[in-house]
Image (cartoon, rainbow, N blue to C red; front, side, top):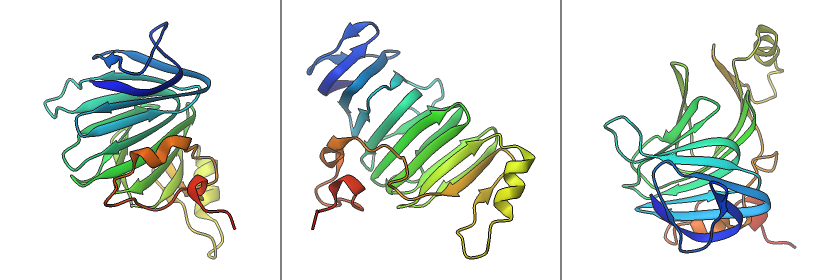
Length: 207
């Protein structure tokens, strides 16, 4: 599935994991507080932030590629043009919308809320039969299975505010990148040198 290129306070199963370790189909990966784990595979890099749990596997479908099941915490993936990955989080599915290079941040807030940032390339989001395109550069707070009260409140937002995208199964609320996406510090190492993409708030130069 890939090889570990950076590991701090990280585990595979119950054992500590180190740089150079090989990751296999079905491995359960986790990080402690202050930990980080980065894995390089064919045309794909994954980075797990602190206090996160991830299971990697080959999907049962014929699509191939890699499936990353994010149980908690935050994940960043960087896929090349021919990289194939799909992330499962809270029963939702997030994957590149096209074959181009993609850099995405996904955070599980709780069982009913996600934060998603498409830093480079568009993403396709789907949940229980409904789907939405996340454009490059967009960051959303995603509420799953919203109540009628939550949906009605967002639909009645003032005209001067960016409207939420309301679906029957989920709500997309526009947020700023700094509003809790949770971008790991080593994200600059995931950037493509020929197309770095929009800057993250952690990489902004101080005056």
